[in-house]
Structures are given as structure tokens and as C-alpha cells.
Image (cartoon, rainbow over all chains, first blue to last red; front, side, top):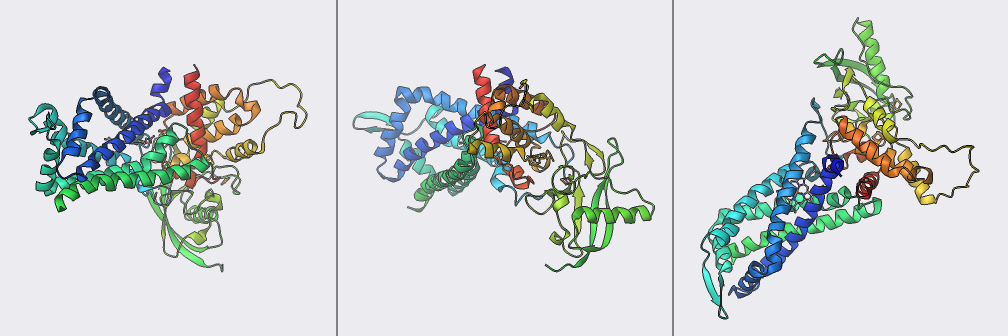
Length: 223
Length: 252
Ligand code: HEM
Ligand code: SF4
Ligand code: FES
């Protein structure tokens, strides 16, 4: 197995499975966040956030998710850095626009932007809930964090944060437009017929993620 | 299409040997028929160079009919120039316009060092083949035709993969200089057939190991190789190799 971890295909295997895992997480995250827009009293979202924060499955999944991010980023960076050394003398002229998509050639830059966004995002919410003092609220006799106020408050008052979140969502969508089919290809689950289907699924998934996560800050900014 | 005569400038890489740093030089080539091939234009240019006492530009070529894979040239930013499903020898001057400057570079990859001008050393591909691109079974006498049934789908896929001419355009065009399209074609055309299937796992592991050692990058699935491959080798071969490699490593 040792050779596998160090091989070019093996390293991409880890980028791929961690990417697939993160994509599943994004769907859950989006579903939960969309509750923000369906109950302006905030009870629905607060209940959901409280449940996510307290149930044992999620307690286990939280470090797993963190590990998923770390491994994805580390393996993707290793792959990328090694690849940068493989053409020591560059071409004077390179014209790739007919041969490949822009997103597929710029995964590292899209990913780097997502990483910056992720950092700010964690400071905005995760760090406040974990280490700070989030506003408390009591719903049906249960004391919990008023996550709704935390989120909606930030999105209502800070336009630059709204812009950042919309950009973050779009860059993430672009990362995944190539990422979806690519992750299946990397673990060998593709062929000529399935490639077309996976690319279609990837485009739809990317739009759902980009539009879905963009709507939330815009909703609070506008309404 | 009516033939025209065009005047062009060729900005071409000159490098006297592997140690030389190399540089671009630009030559005028006049009265080029749009019906001529790119290599004919290069020949005419070289003739002019020789006549004016200069060293002709060295480039690889052999069959000039799309079979041998020797004619490696990176033309105006694309492997084998601005056309699809062809090597350089099948590129025509009708793809260029009067007054155009055409940039011609050697394949650029850590795995393909430049020997002279546009000629690169593609021994790395041979070494990958030596590692597993064969079947090591003593078959005795030739078996009866059709004694081993092969289904039509697999035989077609194997033939498609076997069309690879080892030109290296996939490496040249890949942003990572990955050789995975080449390796996957060589692995696939054997692994799809009953005679080659037996050693498929060992072959995939051995060839990938050598590939990784020889200066090629990993695959980002951009698909540029498939688009620039003169033989239209499909990315589905890379999926097959990824699958085989994974299974081969899980099995032992
Ligand atoms: C929620 C966040 C993210 C998700 C869902 C995600 C998902 C994916 C997926 C599915 C792939 C395709 C895997 C493959 O080609 O086999 C991928 C590739 C990649 N990701 Fe991410 N990613 C995320 C964040 C990041 C971050 C933060 C970075 C930071 C550096 C990053 C860097 C990369 C790179 C460089 C590749 C391409 C590797 C290559 O093929 O050369 N990703 N990502
Ligand atoms: S896969 Fe295509 S581009 Fe690569 S070496 Fe074979 S024929 Fe050339
Ligand atoms: S010279 Fe043989 S393929 Fe071009």
C-alpha cells in the first residue's frame, strides 16, 4: 500500500474521496441554512442549529469534517506543488482555450479563494459559537444559542460580508463545476457515456451550490 | 478550396544541444502554398537556411502520414498546431494566414528533455513500456483463430486504445505534463483482451511506478490530452487505469 499513497494516482484518489465527502456535507449545510429564509422568527433555524450542535452523530461528524477539509487541502496542495515542477522550461506561447475548460485549469486558485473565504466564515460564526459568547435565547423552555440573530444580524448590517459570501459561493460553484466529474474520474467511476452525465450533474450541482449559498446573504440584505 | 501563396514568419526554438540554454530565432518564409503541409514549409525554410550558410532547424519526422508519432512540434501554443485529430505532419498551411508569425517550440516536459532545436528525448515512453507494456506468457504454437472468444465491445475498445502512436502530444499539452493518457492507452489495449487481462494488475502498478519516476505529473482531468491527441484516445482509458490501479493495490 505504501506505493499507493505516494503514487500520482493514489494522491489524486485522496483529493477525490475527500472532495466527494465535502460535497455531501455542502448539501446538508445548504439544506439547513435555507431554513433561515423560511421562518423570520428564527425558531426553525435555531431549533435545527441546536439539534446539529447537540446530537451525538454530529459531535462525531464535526472532527471528521475538519479532517476532510485538512486532508483535501493537504493532498490537493501536494499534487499541485509537484505538478508545478514538471515543466521546468515553460512554453513561450500556450493556448489551451479549445482543449480544456478554464475551471479545470484553475482549481488551485479557485480552491485558494475558497480557503480564504472558509477562514473568514469560521471566524464569523463557528468561532463565535464555539469560543465566544453567542446571543442566548429560550425556545419552548430550552435554552440555546440564538444563531438566527447571529447570522441575520451580520448579513443585514454588513454589505462587504454579503459581497464576500456571494463571491465565496460563486468560486465554490466554479471549483465544483469541474470537481464533480473529476472526482468520479479520479477513482475510476467514469467512461465515455457516464462522463457526459457526470458533467451535467456537476453543472447542476455547481449552480445549486453557487445560487443556493448566494441567496441567503442577499435575502437578508434585501428584505 | 483554392490554393494561395502566403508569406509568414516562423519564430522557432534554437538550441544547439542538451546543455545549451537555447533561444528563439525568427525567419521569413515566403511563397508558401496553403496546400502544402507544415513540414514541407519547414523543409523550405531549412533549404533557405542552408543556402544562406546557416544551420537548418532540427526536427523529428519519419512517416509523414500520421503513423509514427515522431513529428513533435508545439505550434502557436498547441501540440501539433491548430487542428484536431492530427499530428504535425498532417497539418496544412491553409490553417495559417498571410503575414502571420508562427511560434514553434519543442515539447516541454521534465520527462522529455530537449536534445537539439525541436527534437526531444522520448526514451521515457520506452521505459514505461519496458516496465509492463507486454504479455509474458509462452503461448506455444499459434492458437486456432477464434479459439479465445472476445466480445465486440471489448475488441473495439482495445483497438481504439491501441491506436496510440506514442507521440507525446498528451504530455506536451497537459498543464501538469502528465503521461496518463499514453499510459492508460497502453494499459487498456492489453487489459481489455483475455491474453492481457491475466497480468493487468501487475502491469498497471509497474507502468505507473515508472511513469511517476520519470518526471511526469499527475492528472487533473482537464481533458486537454484527449482534445490534442492525434488518435482521439479517450479519457475513459484513464478512468479504466485509475480503477485498475486502485483494485491492484487493494488486492495486495
Ligand atoms: C467545500 C470545499 C471544497 C470542496 C467541496 C472541494 C471539492 C473538490 C473536488 C470534488 C475536487 C475534484 C477531485 C478530483 O479531481 O479528483 C477538488 C479538486 C481540487 N481541490 Fe477542492 N474542494 C474544496 C475546497 C478546496 C480548498 C479549500 C482547496 C485549497 C487549496 C482546494 C483545492 C483543490 C485542488 C487544487 C484540486 C485539484 C487537484 C488536481 O486535480 O490537480 N479545494 N476539490
Ligand atoms: S495518447 Fe494520443 S497524444 Fe498521447 S502519445 Fe498516444 S497518440 Fe500521442
Ligand atoms: S511524421 Fe510520422 S506521424 Fe508525423
